[in-house]
Image (cartoon, rainbow, N blue to C red; front, side, top):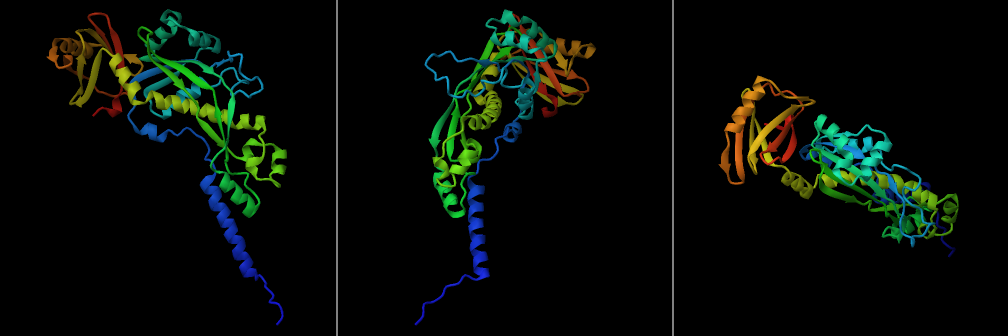
Length: 368
C-alpha cells in the first residue's frame, strides 16, 4: 500500500491562518498597555472641594544631591528646566473638578521660582495679596521636582504571552513585558491665602511603567528579536527615556489631583476653617448657616469676580450677626441673603473676634 499523501486544501489553509491571526489579535488586545492619559472622569464625578485655588511656584527640576548616585543612569527630567507646565496642571485640576476654581499664576518663571523656594509666608506676600484680590482661598505652591533615575525592574509576568506570540506569528515586540520605575517625585504644598501658613504638604510619585520591545529598543533590538525572544533583548536607554518621561509627567499631574481630592486632605482643609458653611436656596435668595468655633466679628461675600455689597448685603450681615445661638460644635449663625442668586460661585470670607480668618467658595449650581 502506498504512502498516504496529506494535502492541505485552500479552505483548510485559510482556516489555519485565520485562527492564528485571531489568536494573535486576542493576545495583543488583551495584553497591550493602554495609552496613559489623565483618567479624570471618575474624579470629576464627585463634587468639587469648596475652595478656589491659585496654582503658583513651578515644577523646577532639583539636581541630584547624593554622591553615590550613578551618573550614567538616565534621569527622568534631566533635559528640562520646568518639568510640568503650570497651565496644564491647572487644567488637570479643573477637568477633575478638584476645586470649585483652579487658576494658574501668570507670573514669569523667575518670579514663580522665588515663590517655589520660599520658606516663610512673608517671602510670597505679594502673590498672597494677588490671590486674595482674585477671590482665591488657597495657594497651591508647586515647590520642585526631585529628579531621579529610571530603574529597570526587569521582565514582568507578560513574558509567556510574548513568547507565545513570538512562536506563533513571529512577533512579540508589542507586548509590554519589561517594567520600569522613575524615581522622580513632585513636591507641593497647599497654603492659606489669608496668612500663608501651610495646611498640607504633598509628595507625589510616578509608579511603574510597562514597555514593549517596540517602545524600549532600537532598530538593532528589532533585528535581534528575529532570533531570540523579545524579552531577552536589551534596552536602548534613550528610547526608554522618551517613553517614560511623558508618562511620568502625566502621572505626577494626575496623582496630585487625586491626592488633593482625597478624604484626608479634604478633612484637613475643613478643620483649617474657622466655621462650617452651609447654603440652601430659598424663595428670593440663599439661606446661609454658619457653625463657628468662636464668635464671628464680620463676614464678606464675593460673587464670581466682584465683592457683594449694597443694601441687601448690609441687611443680611446685620441679621446674621444678630442670629447667634449656641450649638453643639460652637456657635450657630443663620440668615437669608435676598438677591437673584445668579452666578457661578460665591465666596464667603469670615473673621472671628480673635482675628482668625478663613474662606470657602461654593459652586452655586450645586446649591439646592
